[in-house]
Length: 494
Image (tube, rainbow, N blue to C red; front, side, top):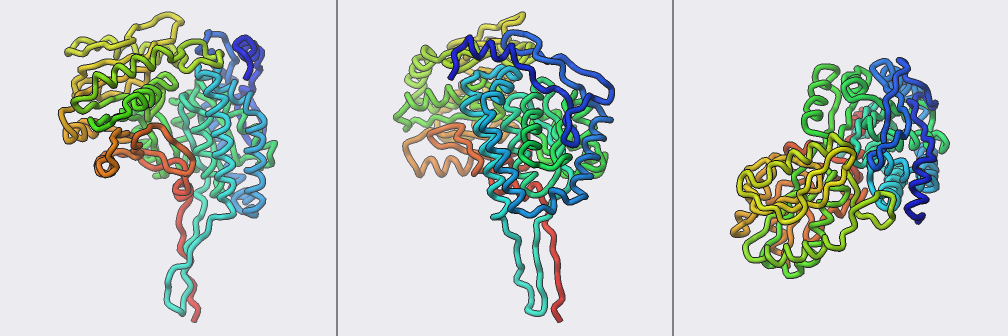
């Protein structure tokens, strides 16, 4: 890996593509408007990004629909579709340093994470779904002998994908992989402050042989491009990852337009439950810390609540202190950095507002907690103890490097506290008793439950939540069902 100075120079020298991508070509927004895209790490202007609106969404959807209706992708021989997807994944791997750099300068993520996690995992998702194309079978139902009843998966048509700014490349790949594997066309609306990696992915898709119009990217404001996509009458499904309030709007837009399908992956307030028979508290502490401080807590499933059964908190906190003494916080372009700053001043100010709550209801600051201002977006890892379960700190998604600790007198109360928010995205439980782990995990209301670990994610398993964390699932073979419709064809053999 290059050194800090080399990465910084490459970031400043980078000239990313920033136009809208429609019908296999980069074009200006119909209005000619652009918005400034600043790097969160040092505030320099990366580029001016084309700002798409309703007219651009109309153009992109028309291109996607034309491609879909023509059958150029939806009816292509499965082996040929697979070959294109695999070539695309190969190109993503070959361009992983450029993709990682685009991701880092857009989001403020440490370059080491973008290079080792985001870029290769995105390529793996495209490859994995490419491999499914010629391995996914339809069904023959057990009809009477004088009939043939076939159940086939049919593509939905045009998919609209709206993705967030925290992991834009990976989450885009989670939508692209199954949607394209099923034969759909897609229009991606990236977050306005993290559009660059999606545009590069689209460029590489065309280079791999994906037909023009099958994959389009329209950067723009959510209130303009995002709403227009969700309301479009020719869009068959909206796949959205983002905040709860915006997710509710997506459902409203779908209901007010063509009743399109909507899948939502929203926020979380994931509990990390430490039961009193957990003996490896050192491993628990380091894993718990990574679960919240990775990407500065800007992760939907971040383990932002720690629920500790009576008897182990003192030792656990001692290990947390020791871990954070060696946890490297700083320059995103330093390959040794483990946590960098937040994505924007707006997000930093939002986290600061939560830090202002400390002490108002008996909370105790254990470490961190210092607010920042101006251009400084780096809030240090924070742990707050003695947090009331019904407080804002315990109930609301902070989306920053803030861990709140809640005491539980026994296992029953720990379970009640763990399930005691509107969210249900992820959870973990730490215990040495495998039977206790299974029983506890079954009762946790969460889409993913980790036992003695956290954030072990892979394309092979589904990801999504319950309650206010949304509906639907990204990743795994189950996502193929989310981007297709079952059709029954009944043939009379008499």
